Length: 66
Image (cartoon, rainbow, N blue to C red; front, side, top):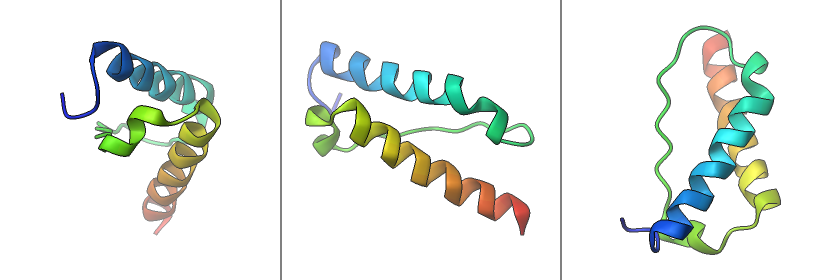
């Protein structure tokens, strides 16, 4: 509840779910991933959200490979 009202939180959740749906094949293995949004995420655009999520998932995949 630290990131805006329900409408804002749901918009952020939609961004995360859509990114994951489109990039699910790039994540190997079975993972429980929790995304915790910061206050700045309340005003984020979808492009910025996707680029942030892309960098997060790249770091995850690098840690898997090692």
